[in-house]
Each structure stands twice: as structure tokens, then as C-alpha cells.
Image 1 (cartoon, rainbow, N blue to C red):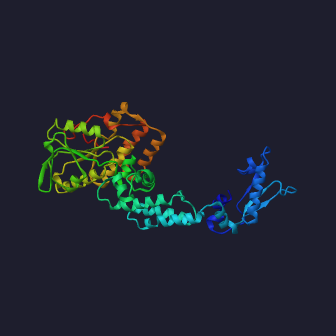
Image 2: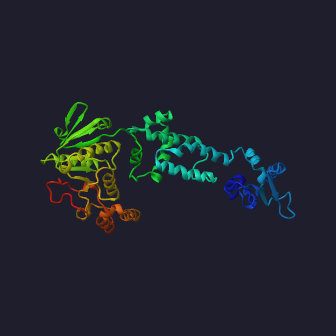
Length: 416
């Protein structure tokens, strides 16, 4: 009790003994129930004996009410100069040592390649330097050592990798990441990472980790080359799933689409692909899977490079997603990172109000997120839609909207 009070005191944080020693009043302490047990006075005698031994060793000072000396303890004080002995008697590693040890474990992150990791480390190290725990578990330096290993290994990943393969490679145990590191890494990504995502899987994908490798789903009039072999995607009416290795090795050699559409949700992607092949000329359809995973990002970069060679003949690029907080943010992410000329498709006030019957009501907490989004200057073009959403308090799933090919519908590509 006394050590805990000391470790939570100003004296501990400054490293200088203050005017008030760590102490407790017997009547208000966790010992009170046993100490004042009138049915068993042996408990009080045992406590008195223990206190006498500690007082004789100079670790504590005991005070007694007037005329009650030796009969009823009033307060117990921990002597500052005996604190090292107190830790020894309690069988505890001094908190200052635990903090110092944890600072040493985390020190390699000071030069981490990622700014957000360095920023987290700087804040934590400053708190530890002031003898505060910074919300970390001081009893688990080994666990933080594993976190450091993981954080140092992530920037070296060239492609996305299954969690268990990564865990075996970095930690020597295929389940160690999931069991001991994953939760802490996710907490860091959500609080300090450069991007806000919708799901844990998207956060992990952003640093190159996945449960299992994901394919890049794409359909439409595109040709590409891998090595010396050429492929025509439009010969496959249902499109194709490209592995991360294929995307890494491929070079796009032709895009004859009248339009390009990036689709957020899987069910809608399949519906759009089925619709596209009922019309000519067809468009190129790409499944983003929410925030695009590493493989999709690489494919979009390949596509961006090819479109830059087309000049004025470049087809328009649209994104179609849920009319909600996540859908808008996914659109802005793709626009910011890949296609500055990206246009929203069926993500406008007219489509929203026409779909309200299938809308899903949202909470005040969700409304606050939309309000914050509206305050972002980068989202100024979304203000009419955000105002309508805040007015009706509903968001719309993409699956509840009907697809119209952009080049054949006068409703296509409506501006916000």
C-alpha cells in the first residue's frame, strides 16, 4: 500500500522527497476489517508484530492515539530513506527501474522511418522521462519488445503478407502477433496512424498485413502484359482476380473503356460487371473493397501511370460507394492518392433523397462525425450532400441503389 502511494505521488515523479511521506490511516485502510475484528484479536496482534518489525528496520513509522500506544494504530508512514529496503522486502522491482527498462526497450523507435511512429515514441518517452507510465503496462517489457520488432519490420515489407507468415518471420512464432501484438498495434494505428479507416482489417492492410492475400478484382476492356505475354481482360465477361504478384509484375498496355468505375462493395461490383456486359461500349470496373488494400493500390498506380499517357483521350474516372461517412472518405482517399480528377458517381443529393426509403438511421455520435467532415476544407464539395444527410439523419447503402452505366444514362456522374 505504501509503495503504491509513493509511486503515485509527486515525490516519485520529481525524484525528490516532498514534505508529506506516503501514509495511511488504519481506520480507512484495506486492513481495517481484520484489524478491528472483535471476534479474532490475533489478527491485530499479527499486524502489530509486522509493523514492529518494519519500524525496527527503519522502514516505517507508526503513530498511536493518545493513551492507546501499543493497542491501536492511528497511522503508518513510509520513510523516504528506506524506500529501497521497502521494495526489497515487498519483492518488487522499483517503478523507476521498470520505467527505465521500458524506455530502453522503446528507444529504437526514435529513428523509425514512419513519422507517426516517431511521434508516438516521443510522447511516450517524454512521459516516461517524467516517471509517468504513459498508459503503458510497466510489467510487460517483453510484450513491448515484440511490438518494437514488429514496428521496425513493417517498413521493410514490399508486398502485403499474411499475419502468420509475418509473425513467424519476425517473432519466431506464427501465433505470437495475433496473441500478443496485434491489439497494441491496432491501438497505435487508430490513435496515431496517418489515416482513419473503417475496419481493423483496413488498418492492418495499411501497414502490409492481412489474414490472407486478397485478389484485385477488375473487369472490362483493358490489355496488359506480364513479361512477354499479353492478355485481354475483355475476353473474360466476368472479369479477373489478379494476385498481388501479378499486379506487381504487370504493365497495362491499353484501356479502351469509355469510362472507369471504382466500386466500393463486393455485391455491387458483381452486379455492375453483369450489367456492363449488356452494353457496348463497356467500361472498366474495379472493386476497391472499402479503402483499397495494398494490391488494389498498386493496380490503381499502374492504371494512373497508363492514363497519364492518354492525354485528352483519357476516359473519365468515377467512384461509387455508400452514401455515408465511410463512402465519402474512401472517395477522398482515392482522389488524393491516385486520381485528382476522380468524380463521384451516384453519390449526390438527388440520388440520396430518392433512396431515403431504404436509408438507415444514424445516431448523434455519427452525426457529429459528419459535422466534423463538413468542417474539413478538403470536403467542401460534399457540403450539400452532408447537409441533406444531417437533415434526414440517414445513410444509404450502395446495394440499395440501382446502377446506370455512366455513358448511357442522363443521371450518370451527377455532380454534388
